[in-house]
Amino acid sequence: MAPVIIVTGASRGLGAAIARQLLSAPIAANVVLVARTESGLKSFADEFPNQVAYLTGDLSTEKVNEDAVKLAIAKFGKLDGIIFNAAILDPIAKIAKASIADWKELYNVNFFSLIVALKEAIPHLQQTKGKVVFISSGASHHYFYGWGAYGSSKAATDHLAATLAAEEPDIFSIALDPGVMDTAMQDDLRDKHGTEMSPAEHDRFLKLKSEGGLSPPEVPGNVAVNLVLKGGPAVNGKALRFTAPELAEYAK
Image: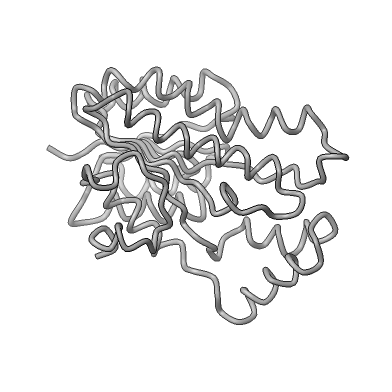
């Protein structure tokens, strides 16, 4: 029976790359796709009409996260895994200039949405011995100037992945750092946020693009897909970069 997987932030970038790999042969999973914008999700539903259900909405609201799990059960009858990919980067600003409202909005999307979805999903994942992949970031343990909100939310995500693994022995859990990818987030870092970052760090991101140092999202996406389908005890509860030696078998 085809696996049933929820993917958040699935309309573009890494989320779209993950969705396509899950939907295509030989996996041919059934997926519930979630994002703020409908266009990318609808194109998947048009291409894979029997495999896709989708939901558009703001993940900072509890209802969207709960409804994604309910949609998976209503449409496909079970839930085998979740890839929590959706996240926002703003605000980028020094702590001295922080907007508390902006920090709270980021945490609602990047962190609290995960807990809301998990509370709804855990009973179903227990039944299927399901798997959860949290897309994290190197910013969870490496400080970038002005990235306090985003980086700390990803550090909290790493801890949440370890906590889920400890509390739910029948559910696999991992926090995956996908590295520096050629996605819209990198476009924003180069073109939009240069004045809020240190000159050296901004220059680094410019050089990564110009020198071909950005990974296609399909590469870490492949690791995420393999983990949500067959993640094993050796990496359960860990926070790892997609190139880590421990994940070599999931990169094939």
